[in-house]
Amino acid sequence: MKAETLALNALREAVLRMPADRLTASRTAAISRLSERSLPTPRHEDWKYTDLQNAVDISNRWLASGAVVPAPNSLDKLVNEITASIDANWLLVVNGIVDTAQFDQDAHIDVERFTDSSAPAFADGPLADLNAALLHDGLRVRIHSATEKPLGILIVDSADEAALVSQANIDVSIDAGCDAEIIEYQSSSGAGESFCNSIVSMHVGEAARVSYVRVQDRHIAHTQTARLAVSMAKDSALDMAGYDVGGGLIRNDLEIDLSEPGAHASFNGLYLAGEGQHIDNHTRVDHRVGPATSSQEYRGILNGRCRCVWNGKAIVHKGADGTDAQQSNHNLLLSPQAEIDAKPELEIYADEVKCSHGTTVGQLDDTALFYLRSRGIGRREARQIMTRAFAADLVNRAPVDACKDAISALVDARLTDLMQEANS
Image 1 (tube, one colour):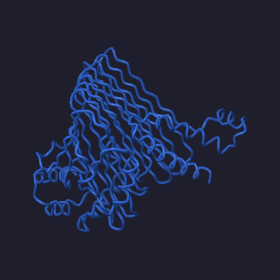
Image 2: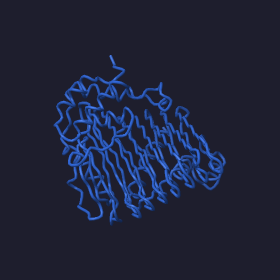
Image 3: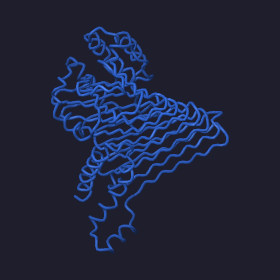
Image 4: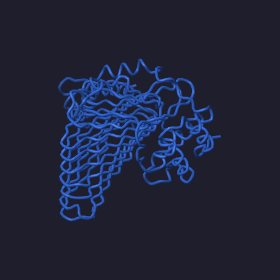
C-alpha cells in the first residue's frame, strides 16, 4: 500500500547515520518542521495540478532500503558527455554528493562547501525542509568579477535498480557591477526510480548583470522538484531562459524578488512534453518598489497523453509605482490527449503601473500550413517546419552563447521524437 506521507521515523534514522558536521543542527531542525507539515499535495492551491505522491513513494522506498547513495563515479560517462558539450567551468553535484574535482580554480570565483563554512539560511517550505534534512553538503559560490568561461552547475543522478533520492543546494552571489554567465544543467540516467530535490539561491548585486540558462534533460521516468530564488539589488539585471526536454514529473519554481529600484528581470521558458510526462512551471516575481521591470514568455509543445502547467504570478506591492510587468504563455498541442493548465496572475496594489498578460493554446495554423503546402512542401514536412519555428525563437534567445549549440541539439532531438509520435 502506498503511504500518503513521508516515513518520518525512517527519515530520522537516515539522518542519524549521516556524519556529524556543521549541517547537523539544520538537519535536526528540518525534521522537526517536517513532522508538523507534510509535503505539498493537490489540496494546496499552488499544487492543485501536480501530485507529489510518486516522490513520496520513491522517498519511502529509498529510506526503507537504507538510504543508500550510489558511488558518484557511476555517472562518469554521462558527466563527461555533458561537460564536453558546453565549454564552462563546472561544479558537480552527483547523486547528491558535491564534487569540485573538475572545477578549475578561478581568481574571479570563490567556492566553499557548506560543511567548511557556516550553515546557510535554508529557504522556507516543506520541500526546503526535506532538502535541509537530507543534504550531504552544499556549495556557496561568489562571483566577484567577469570570468572567461560561464560557471556551470551540473546536478546529475543515476538510479539503476534501487530507488534513489538526492538533494542539491547551491548559494550564489554576484558582486556589485559584475557581469556573470551561469548554466544550471540537470540530468539523470538509469531505469530505476529517482527523485531529485534541488534549491539554488542567487543574489544579484547592485548594477550587476547575470545571464542564466537552466537545462533539464532527465530520464523520461524520473521525478524532479527544483527551486530557484533570486533577489535583485538596485539597477541589476537578470536575463534567464529555461529548457525542459525530459523528466517524468517535473516541477520548477522560480521566485524573483525586486526589492530595489531600477532592477530588470527577463525570464523565458520552453517545455517539450510527450507521452506520460508532467511538466509544471510556477513563476513568481515580487515588485516591491518602483520603477522596476519584469517580462516573461513561456512556450510549450505537447504531444500524446501528457500534462503541462504554467502559472505565472506578478505581484506589484503597495508603493511600487512605475512597475512594468509583462507575461505571456503560448502552447502548441500536437495531440487531442495533451493537456495544458495555464494561469496568468497579476496582483496590483500600486498606482501608475504597466502590466499585461496573455495566454494562447492551439494547434498548427491551417492557413500557414496551406501556404507551405502550396509551395510544394508535403504536409508532414510543413508541420515539422512550423513546429520547429515555434520553438526556435526561444532557443535563439538563450542568453549564454556557450550553450546555444547544445540546447539546439537537445531541443531538435526531442522535437523529432515528438513529431514522430504525432505522425505515428
